[in-house]
Length: 154
Image 1 (cartoon, rainbow, N blue to C red):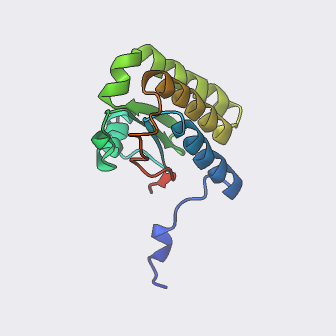
Image 2: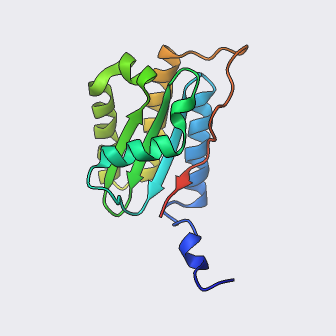
C-alpha cells in the first residue's frame, strides 16, 4: 500500500444499503425502457457551472453513444451542494426544459430534508417512468448499453 492510496478510495457518501437502493432503482427503471440512467457523485465541482460539469461527465462516460440518444445523467457535487440532470438529445427534445427543472426541484426538496438517497431514488423512478413513456422497452432489440453502478469522482 502506497502513501497515496487513500486518494483513490471512493468517498463514503452513502451507506452500503443506500448504494444498493440507488443501483436497484436504476435497474428497475431500465427494465421498462430502452433509456439509460447513470448517477455520478463527487465531493466538489471543479468547474464554475454545474451544467457544464454534468455535460463534461456525460461525454466522458460516453453516454451519448446510446442507440436512441436517450441516456440521462444525474450529477451531484456533495460538498458544493450542487446537482444537475443532463439528458441526451433524444429524451431532452421529447420532454423539454420544464421537466428537468421540476425533477431538480423535487430532488432539492428531498435533499433539504436530508433524504439524499431517497431523493435520488425518487428521481430515478420518475425519469424511468418518463423514459418508459417516450422509449418503451422492446424485448427483441433492447440491451443494457451502460453500467448501472454509481460512479464516484473525487
